[in-house]
Image (cartoon, rainbow, N blue to C red; front, side, top):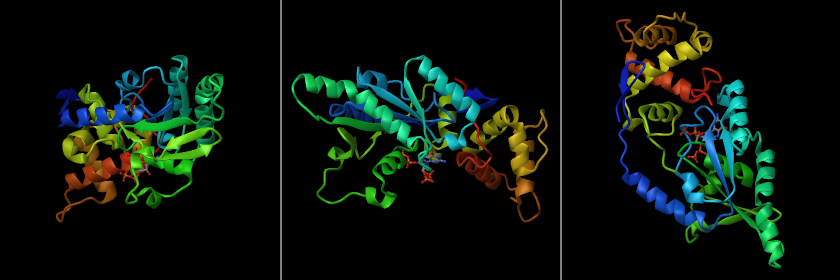
Length: 290
Ligand code: G4P
């Protein structure tokens, strides 16, 4: 779907085939689970959610984990948490890279699983484990969270021959078990807006959208939403009537992304700007309001 964002046509090349396969896989995995933790990117909590998940999990309790809060605008994160809680979601903020909020998340899992434990108790079964699964679209931090909880590093998650990876439950406390592989949800592309948000935060691969267009749109957004941060990070003047090209010119010069003749190297500037944003170098920023 092509739409104009900030005056630029933007579209994601997306094939629904990916979705069908992911959906089938997710349905099977969810059958084994009591509590679901959906990870969202705190910079784009709406765009990084999967609206069909609700249908797939039915009445199972769900916890929303807003991840990457280190890169999100804290004031916006507070408002997102309040908005989610108002809708009766259990919402927790986490920074999986640094381990912030993990204890609170674990306590929430335990609490969400209590009705399951009670149900088994009524049937006379004591200590029946509550099974938890982490789900989310690509790159929101699912593996980082699982590794954090299990206290292991990245290399330990690699496949071991002969082990069926998707049925590995690991005890993470009394009566609590975690599936050690995450459920991968497909990103939703209901609009170019959502696609754009997922593109610049790194949830979709770079070959499915036009980077120069994405950078131009993002520059115009940040000029409006976070002009001071943009100016401070690159050490440039940001004027309200600057075009995307003018901002690229300033950034390119400030960062020395120049061609042999001293002209700005625009593709290189686009690359470094998109990378800076994706990794939160420009400071904490949130693209979506609750
Ligand atoms: P996934 O399983 O959901 O696909 O995501 P994964 O854990 O692999 O995390 C994706 C990237 O996000 C990783 O960066 C990871 O370090 C980073 N990340 C996860 N949680 C946080 C967080 O709370 N804050 C920050 N700042 N980053 C976080 P990466 O290895 O550099 O991957 P890439 O971005 O180069 O693909």
